[in-house]
Length: 158
Image (cartoon, rainbow, N blue to C red):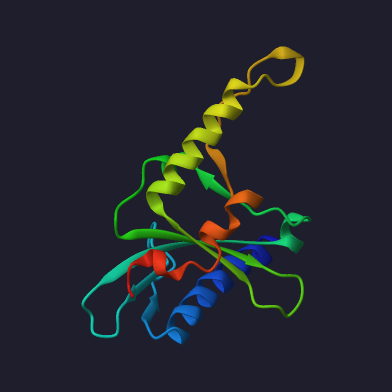
């Protein structure tokens, strides 16, 4: 897949999230593409509460499988606040609506850190430890799908 196609998947995910939130009665706006860490700002219609959303988008076509996993970075282990959330978007291969997984930033930071520590503790080839790297994975296991799938109430805007 070309680099352009990958960037379009990310842009599509942010638009899908903003559209979904607007359809649910919230004011949702995309931030400029060079805004670090925040892709969508969303607030209640009366402005009494707002939150920031980081969108991570993937597609089965892009990954070549159907696992619920998104690439993160080392910095994501330490970025969290009560008003920052992640929405992990899984774009389908057909014209189906995407799946949205709404997760608190603290949950993401903890899971990314723990998963990476487990990865480093396992030995790689020839019994050598895995090398440390900037990339990490955030994965939603089958047992956790119901905790995050379409859980827009997690944003605390209701």
